[in-house]
Image 1 (cartoon, rainbow, N blue to C red):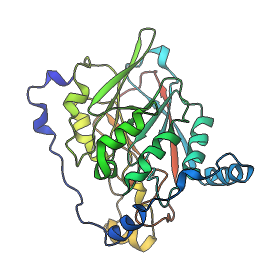
Image 2 (cartoon, protein in one colour; image 1 turned 90 degrees about the vertical axis):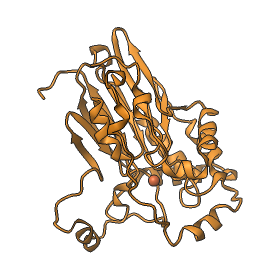
Image 3 (spheres, rainbow, N blue to C red; image 1 turned 60 degrees about the vertical axis):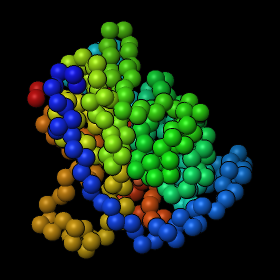
Image 4 (spheres, rainbow, N blue to C red; image 1 turned 90 degrees about the horizontal axis):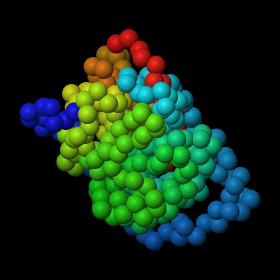
Amino acid sequence: MADTHSSPRSVFSPVLIESREHPLRRWLEHFERRDFDDLSLNLTSARSANKRRWKARRIEVNQFRVPIAGLGRELDGLRIVHLTDIHHGLYFSAEALLAAVELANSLEPDVVALTGDFVSYSRNFANSAGELLSGLRARRGVYAVLGNHDFRVGADLVTRALRRHGIEVLRNRHTVIRSGAAQLHIAGVDDLWYNPNLPRALQRIPRGRPVVLLSHNPRIVAAAAHFSVDLVLSGHTHGGQVRLPFLERMRDGNHSPRRFHVGWDSWGRTRIYISRGIGTIVVPVRWACPPEIPVFTLDSRPTPR
Ligand SMILES: [Fe+2]
């Protein structure tokens, strides 16, 4: 697919969308760098189990059926459970992450897609995130890409923490899921602000084969469409996280919804879903924007374009 274009990188110019530090960032870093005794939580007690059930109930599960052109019948019905923007740390505890893992497992995934921001500002939570996510159970594997926060604390550190616990990290590369004659390519790119290489992630995928791309930042969508990616799964925006009506009006100005911010959108024949994710950033608050775990059931039946 990728090697059929003479200069594919020319269409893929990462755009810096935001570079200002939040004024609270230094303050948060100060607290997150302290050695919290996070992992000493007794996660097996009955009280903890109740708390986890309560936390899991706050997460919205949205299920979708997604037609994928060229998907073989043997992979029809493949279920992808998508977790993103966990931000394990001061405001997203081990218990909250375990609740999300248990909820994801209850959705009986074939594939779990993790699209980055496993931690916020602290390296101390990387291994803990990997350890807790090792509880994910998916018949065809757990795949991850890194987000901007993972790069900030150390891409290699987070990658090692995930790999150590059996999670396959797709750093500008892809893997193939096979069943009989059917194949689904799952590709992953590094975060948009940290030199992603989409052509490399897709190289040697034969033209016309179905591709699901994991990308933390949804702004990859134009490049993904250029390479005829079928479905992009992203996060990063948290869906706005705090959606106060007057703020929304200020942001949107003309009242038309922003593109590539939350939920479904498309670019050409490429569909994208941007999840609100499950964690929070800057403040541990969500408003009119609940945490979310989307589930995608792939449909092999051809659809008119
Ligand atoms: Fe995030």
